[in-house]
Image (cartoon, rainbow, N blue to C red; front, side, top):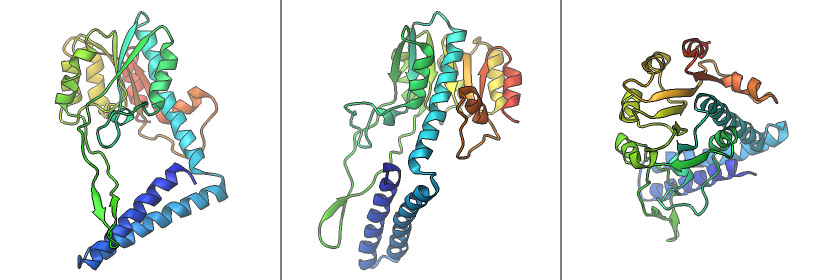
Length: 275
């Protein structure tokens, strides 16, 4: 078994136990919750067995997706290097969960970020790459008393989505960078144009910004006059290929799912993303 099946199985067991305890206390939703938890645990176990039997193990799936993520960062970095060859300092927005645990405590060692790894490889050793992220507030573990009187820690899922104020709080860290690269999603409570207006006079690269192609066309057309000067974007194709195969050639693998958009030829590239 791998962590990709162990974690869901453990969560399923805890949910099942929690549902059973609530059922005994008279909650009508206790039994359905217990059944759901049991199904999650059983499904995770079956997924592991099937994966081993078919050769499509969770390890193989994880390796494939990690390589796709790495390639996104690599190709984005190559375009940044091409657009800003003299760049010496690049500030990178990363997912906060690569630096914090779910309780808001800083990790002793950041979690591996494959997009960041690809970006750094493309930029080369001569570029100072500084990572930034929002701050995750500290929180206490949630405990649940079991029927036998013991207490278990309930699984938690962080719900701290970046907001515009979190991005603005990073202004002092972004200021002075030759390029700002957003590998993590930008705030959902502001439009992409608003976020990039805040970053005016800054060269920017974006990984899957979540904007439609028409919006991205307008941003590239602006050319840094009213908002940030976007030099590179990687977006997912509308008809991206998701299967158990990945070509050994980097370009061929990248092209199955993504499109690289640069300042030159951005209109054609964005149209290609729809195909």
